[in-house]
Length: 186
Image (cartoon, rainbow, N blue to C red; front, side, top):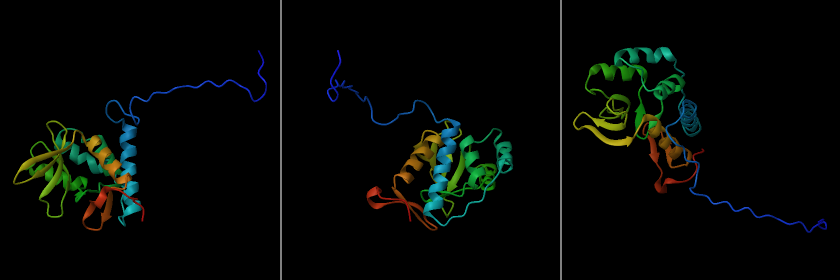
C-alpha cells in the first residue's frame, strides 16, 4: 500500500546501554600505550615551559643490560620520546642514565625507579616482583601501590591531566587543582 507523502510510518529503535563508556578488556596495546605517552608529552608542552629532548634506543640499552632483561616497553618509549623529562605529580622522571645508576646502586632490590622528588628521598618504582607501581623511600622501602602496571598508572595519570585535574608549577611538578577540575590550557 502506498502512503501519502508526509505520512510515512516511523520505526522506533530502542537501545539499552549496559555500561557507560567504552571499556577496554585487557591491557593496553602497544599503540594505545604510545598514544598515552604522546598525550602526556603534549599536555606538558601546552601547560609548561619544559623543553624536551628526544632520546633513542641506545639510551636504554645499558639499562637493559644491567637489569638482565628489557625494561618496560612503555618506559622505553617514554625515554626515547622525551628522555623521561616529565613530572609524575611532585616527582620528576629520571633519565635512563639516572635509572641505571640507581639500579646498579642496589638499594632498590628488584625494583626499578623511574621518578624521584628533588631531594631523592621519595621514588616511584616498578616493582620487579609483580610489575606494580609503588612509592619507595629508603627508610620505609616499598609503600603504597599506585598502579597495577606502568601502563595502568600512566593511563590514569594521563586521564587526570587531560581532564584538567592538574596544573604544572615550575620546579614543583604537577599539582592537583583545588576542586580537581577546569581547563589545562594557558
